Length: 100
Image 1 (cartoon, helix red, strand yellow):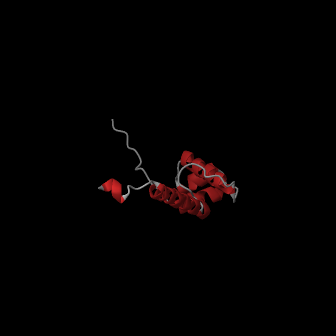
Image 2 (cartoon, rainbow, N blue to C red):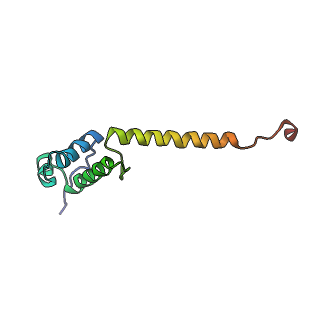
């Protein structure tokens, strides 16, 4: 006997954010939202937790949902790259005499 599994679905940040807002801002239950949208409750609860963390100014876990947190992550990545580039430039380079 073979068990059929649902295909693994992927959802964008905008969809996840809307689901989280339905629960947090509109006061709908996770179960109701999941039933209406044919979603698993585990994923929806994770998105709600992520959204709540981001509203509190925390990074949360996973990919950011809000535009502000997405921008913060982007700026942090740019900052890391600039620091690494700066560290490379700070390393002493051999002088021309040392190269001969």
